[in-house]
Picture 1 (cartoon, helix red, strand yellow):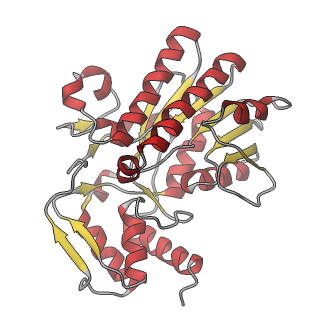
Picture 2 (tube, rainbow, N blue to C red):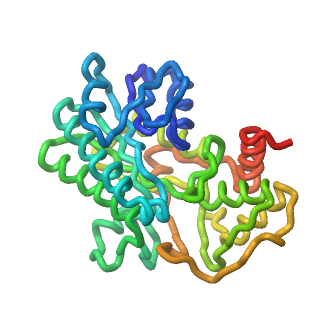
Length: 312
C-alpha cells in the first residue's frame, strides 16, 4: 500500500503507542497527538476536549486517515471522574467528527466491547442494531460514552456522508500499559504481584484477552481494506477464553508468587460476567490472526513491567 498520512489521537497511550509503532513500521507518515507528554519527533500535545487545539493541527497538514483513540478509559475511572470521561469521550469525539465533516478525512473510531452491556448471547457486531436497548443495556458510564461516540459517527455518516470504521477492542494487554488502579485486570494483577500488594479476583467472570501487538496489526490493516460504516470486534482466539482466576494464576506463575495476597469474590459491580465474542468479520476483512497466546503474552508483559519499573 502507498504511504498514507495518518493522525493518531491518544498516540501516547497504551494502544496508541503500539499502533503508531506498527503504522510507522509499514512506512506511513504518522503524527501522534496526546495530552501526555512525549519525546517522539512525531508528537504534538493537544487536548481533544479543546476544539481550537485540535483544529490547528490541520492548519498546514492534510491527513488521509485519523485513528481516534483519545479517551478516558475504564469503568471505575468513569464512575469517579465522570466529568472528564464525558468531556473527553463524547465532546472530544464530537470535535473530531465536526472536523471530519469539514475536511473529509476518513476516521477509525475506537469504541469498546463494553457497549454490549450484559447481552445474553454471542456478541457479534450486529447485536447493537438488531436488538432492543433493554437487551444491550450498558453497565457503566464508560460504556455509555463509547456507544454515544458510535451513534454520533453513524449519524454523521447519514447526514454528511462522512466515512468511518468503528472498532470494539476486547481486553487488550501488553507492553506500554502502565499501572493505574483503573486499568484492565492483567496490568493490575502483574503490578500488584510484582510489588507484593494484595488484589481481588472476581470468580465466575470469563474473558478473552488479546496481546496488543496482535491487535495493533489488525487495526493497522483497516486502511488496507477500509469499508465505510463497518464495525469490528477485535480480540483474541475463542479457545483462549478463561476465567479471571485462571489469568491470575498465569500471572502469579510468571511472576513467581503464590496467591496468599489474593482475595476471591463472586461478583463485581458495573461489569458483565461473561462476554462471548464473535471475531469473524475482523478475520475475514482485516486478516485478524492473533499469534501470542495468554501464557506467552503475559510473560512478555511481566518482562516489560519489570524493565519499566526497574525490578531485578
